[in-house]
Every structure is written in C-alpha cells, then in structure tokens.
Amino acid sequence: MPCCSVTEISKCIVYPEKKSTVSDLRLSVSDLPMLSCHYIQKGVLLSRPPPSFSFDDLVSSLRRSLSSTLSLFPALAGRFSTSPAGHIYIVCNDAGVDFVAASAKHVKVSDVLLPGKDVPLLFREFFVFERLVSYNGHHKPLAAVQVTELDDGVFIGCTVNHSVTDGTSFWHFFNTFADVTSGACKIKHLPDFSRHTVFDSPAVLRVPPGGPRVTFDADQPLRERIFHFSREAITKLKQRTNNRVNGIETAVNDGRKCNGNGEINGKITTVLDSFLKSDTNIKKTHDRTAEISSFQSLSAQLWRSVTRARNLDPSKTTTFRMAVNCRHRLEPKMDPYYFGNAIQSIPTLASAGDLLSKDLRWSAEQLHRNVVAHDDATVRRGIAAWESDPRLFPLGNPDGASITMGSSPRFPMYDNDFGWGKPLAVRSGGANKFDGKISAFPGREGNGSVDLEVVLAPETMTGIENDPEFMQYVSEVTYDY
Figure (cartoon, rainbow, N blue to C red):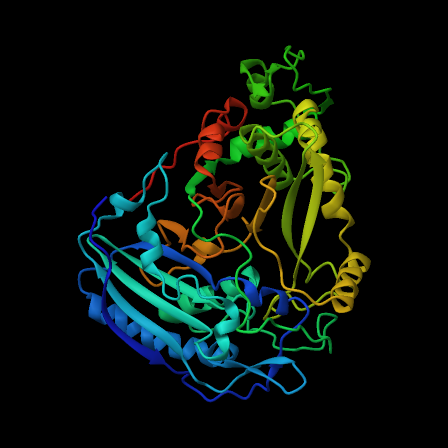
C-alpha cells in the first residue's frame, strides 16, 4: 500500500441551484438520539471516466449536479438551530455543503481492493468531516462530498449528518446525485419532508454542556474486513436455519456428530451440497413470517462465530442489536421516501452458553422472533418510552459482548452510476466504528449476495477468520477493473 496521503486540490461550498421553499424541520424522536453519532460516511469506488472526460471535467460536472440535487434535498444544504424551548430544527437556509476535490494518483484500484485482507485505512482519507459528531451541524455543513482521483479510478465519498438522514434517506440522496450527474431526464422519486408522523414530538432532549460526544472509544485498536457471501452460500445458510432440505424438514444438530444430513460441527458437507443441488422441488408454500430470512440466518451465524471468538464465559449475556426501518411497519405506512431518520434498534439477548450449545436455528429464531414482532404497536411503544426519557443513542460495545448491525443489503448502493458504469465497490470512512460494528451491503453481483463490513478487536477478527463454521460461507470477490 502506498504510504503517501491524499492531497486536497480544491475546496468550495456548493449551493442549491434553486432557493428552498421547505419550512424549518424539527428533529424527530428518531433524529435526536443520533446527535452523539458521527456523520455517516459512505462512498463508491469507480473506474476512471472515459479519456475524453478529464478529472477537471468530472469535478465541474459533479459540482453542477450536486447543486441541482441539493435543490431537491434542501434540508442537506441547511444548518441546525436550537429554539429557546430547546427544540432543534433543520433550517433550510441554502447555506450549502462542502465540496472537495483531491488527488491520490499514486494509488491504484488494486492497492485498495484487497480480497481476503483488511480494508486499508486509506479509505478514511476519501471523506471529509472525519469523526465529526452530528450535533456540530449547528455550525458545520450538514453534508459534504469529496471526489478523489486515483491512478486508474475515482472515489466519490459522501458525508451526511446522521441526525438528518438514516440509511434509506442517505442512499436516496446519493442515488439521485448519481442520476442527475449521468443526465437522467426525470428523477424517479422525490423526498418527502413531511413532519406529520408519529416520530414528530414536542419532547426536548437536554444536551450536555459543550455538546454530546460519541459513547465509545474511537481510538480503540480495530481490524476491518469485508466478508463476501454469494447467493449460494446465503441459500445454504437459510436452508440450514429453516431445517429444510429439498422440502423435507430435518433436525439440524450443530453438535459433534454428523446429523445424517451431512452437517458436522455446523459445517455443510458434500452430502448436503448434493441435496441443495438436486432438482427436487423445494417446499414453497409456507408462511413467510414463519420462515427465518436469509439475512437473519446470516446474522445468527455471525453472532455465534463472534461470540465463540470472544471466548466469553457461558453465563455472559450477549446482545445482537439490529437497526430496522419503521416506514413500512407503521399503520398507516409512512411514505417510503420520507426524508429523515425512521429507524429503531432491536436488541436480542442470549447467553454465550446458549448461543454456542444450541444449533444455528435457535440463534436465528431469537432474531427472527424480535424482528417479526416489531410492528406498529412496538414502534409506538418505543417512541413513548423515549419521550418519557429523552436520551442520546449509546453506540458502542461497553461490555465486550455486543454486536451492532447497521445498513442493509437492500440499499441500492450499486445503482450509483455517474455516467460510465456501476461502482466497483462500496466502502465507508472511519465514522461510528467500534468493536462489534457490522454494516451490511449488497454484493456487487446482486442476486441476493451480501457483503458484511466487519469491525472487530484484532484478536476477535483472528478468531472468526479461523472459524470453519463461519468461513465455509465466505468466498473471495473478483473485481473486474
């Protein structure tokens, strides 16, 4: 990996092309807890534009399209303001966002896409506002874009205040930015800035003097890797958790002995492989709410393997925390393009002993049960509980036994075609990373594949790298650059 840092070439403020007509937006019950979180940092690595399109041309094009996109997303060009009563608002005042052009021409795409190795720290230099806490939106832009030229590629990094957007809104903005840049004649979906939702509340969050800080040690030694799971691997995991092979319900045992279905110590053997590859019809008529999903199956496997790698006492309580989108869980449903945070966190608890002594299905069932139960009534109870005790969201892993799953493989990350092809890869900056922080991305090939961005203490990462139950599902990605 080249040792030289990224060099800033230019920096400016980009203003919306048209003046905002959106009124001040009060931060909601779902926005306010994020004031102690870092700004979201996500970006896409692209091949170089055609030779006829220079980097200077690209910078000019991105500035223009960003200005046009901000006219559709005026909240991102605003600033925070706290009223005398203590309510925090997004003032859509067209104050603009930061735009940085940078150079890392000594770096090749092959230097940063390293299958089977840790994610290079260099990616953190492809973003602005490193470690900036969202409360700082009172005097800092609520968003920023950095475009970095590599020897044979380009990275476009987007940084957005986490109290302004969740993942759904973040990628809606990013997708629109890409569409505008590529010359799309019509924008598919406009954001909904309505604040007449159950998340709107008169409750006031009392912020500590000097503003909030992140609730974890941002300097803790960590390792970060991308683990890729193909559609076939995900299918095997889902079959395993649902105890279903070719329509036959089977009792899957993660114990020391082979269970008759070709599984030993949680490892799928050639017997089960042949079952999965056969042409026999798999049972399709079942209640989808009763079925453990692919993502729940993958999450359960990760929970087991990380817990094993941490060598916890069997009596230690472990927590798997999963962020869920509430837009479709409410009755009536919210607009799917509601702009803001509309998420809640679902914690699932289990002892380390239970996770490791019972089979994978048991672990997956614990997650599945909580996700299915998170309905309209549950969302509203969560809102009421926060209103009775307004508080910041405590990110981190204080007990050494927690996992936090964020992002989603359903987000359209690879739809960000800026005019010369879809991204080679999606990567994030250093924001909100701690031992046990996992982010789920779609695999580049789509079709149900998943990438997990896994951040762990070094010794724990080594443990899952040497866990055959986990690694049997991991495959190496081939990048076509």
